[in-house]
Image 1: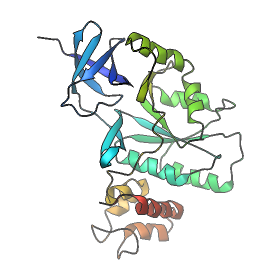
Image 2: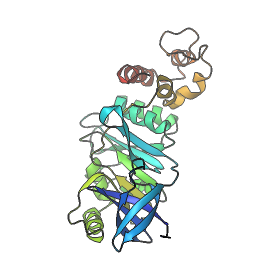
Image 3: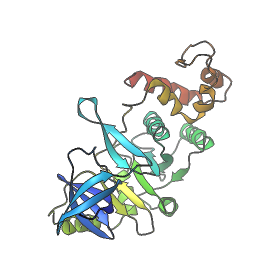
Image 4: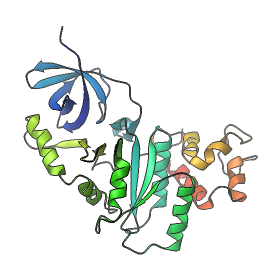
Length: 293
């Protein structure tokens, strides 16, 4: 009987999947019946030839981050994430609506979230500072960094230690620059994966997991900029706002939409100042754009 080995998915390479086991990387295929394998997955696999493996099963995930794919399907992007560090910046502009969308998705997927304000060498308005205070009051850690001047990078690197993380953010916020600063030998590590799997040039199509020199792992997913709201119900979107979670249980009606509904505890919280009105207004905008179920 072929021995079952336990490994970890660290990259997608064309049609193959790079699996790490005991510091060795093997290019694997998957059984047809398996669900989509994601980077970060722990898997059971077998060696079918000296340099080729086959993934037999996916071990239970503690978390999974997905994105919309074709025909309204959901495709896993990364598994077993501990924290998503949401990167935003003064320029091009602080998109707090997108930031709230990221946080709502993380809240609903058992993934911790933290905030990274990049380009701190640029001017920040009082309005931005007020919004940041709101997030910090909700328990979200905030890291102020500058990839340009390297300010604050060590604190961010320290936060990445001992966990599996991902940086997420819209185009232009400097996520790539931060990733390169955190993984200065990224190209070398990427080439090593390609060489050890005998895949030639590196052709990652989804994400790649890198071991950080100072400890911890970072999943880099350059092609995934936005976490979609697909898969979230109207209730789960509201639950994704951390300050809504307690009031949700106090709304007079189970199907409360948190608009002008009678006995809405969320709106009451906004009116009495316990819930940020700007966060509430962004919730309403996200509610309008999500595929309601």
